[in-house]
Length: 121
Image (cartoon, rainbow, N blue to C red):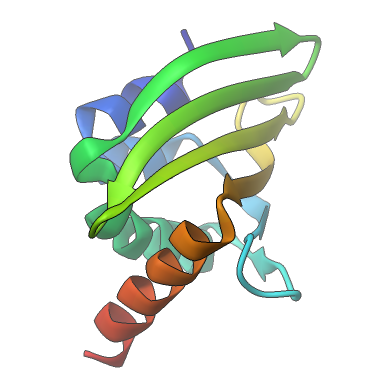
């Protein structure tokens, strides 16, 4: 099991931040432009975690070389969510790239709206 998965399952966002490379790139399922850098990505993951983490459960994972795929289920409001975290690790063992994909579209929209509301404060 990966340190990234351990941190997410423990809902420990300090530990999650520690798994990220200083120059990590995060590709969101909601916006086109990637988030870059540990501070930006960790901050966003903390907010996303408030929405997804309470009911997030990893179903399975596959690892090969410097790549890992984690399949998860969660819930946003009344919407069931399925998704995958696609992770690439750097030579230092830290997350260099994270791509998240989610379905169905209605759950993705619900997640986008919930995260947007939290970011708007």
